[in-house]
Length: 414
Image (cartoon, rainbow, N blue to C red; front, side, top):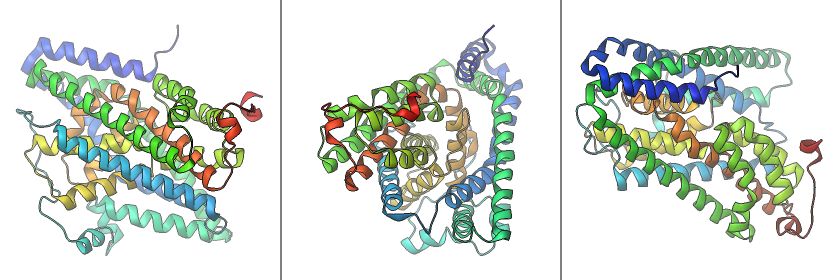
């Protein structure tokens, strides 16, 4: 018998949760604990995930030999991720997916509701004591420290003691990812308990605002994909609709598997065979994008944060929204690449911005739906970024792009 996929388990857990919640009503309070245990386990791993993933991302970059291609790649990732964050803010502000939701019990918001000066916002990233930062779960400071450590390791990687630290961190990250994967194996049970309790305590009516969130998130993803694609097409002086059509294999695989990792071969094919991106650029930008460029994930975390703030009746200041975008972008650079990673990403950004972590429960049961549009945006934007870098390096073959010449990505089709 074929083993049930992770996505199918999540769907079954969500549907059973809705059914049990509707039948048992308020009595679902007795199974709430299983959902709380799941959320607590995810929360426990957040500092280690952020710290380890960002160190690994930073230390794998060859700082000395990075060159113009590396700089342009990082520039494109930062710009597209920031644009995704701003789009998330705009859609959250305009459509207010959390407005009018009542009866949900959450802890107090501990982020900033009043404006912060630019200097205060910058200082918030710099720890006086990194041990205190870990102890207080001050993840903005953990992020900066991780980047400093990672860049230092990359720069001095030829020194023998640094090599040993490099290998140790890689090994520790494997351990952290195995722990997270193990926790995520229990996600369907946690999702079942969370969904059942949410429906039982709030009624089936709670599904309506969640449906609104799904629609708003989907529209924001479409807007992001369109904005990035149009911007790249304008810069590269190519037809946007052709470029979009050239990425269809990547889009289809990403939407059906909801896996960035499984989409990588299609990213190579579409970038090289359909768009004419040189192999040198494609094989550098696309794998790196899987870790450093998750625009759909940025939109999800920003919108989820704004939704919970709206449920709590909190009006986020301009600086608080700016910090939300910055932290969502930074946390996306340490993309976890685990099943159900959207839940983990939301937990990380909530922790970064003082948003009650119980709010993760609202989105845990619908993450599998959100992934259908989130993951394609993540991976197609990587392909678009490879077109941008190739065009800037004059390594975009326009004859291939417009179908006047055919090439075969031998490494993929071998």
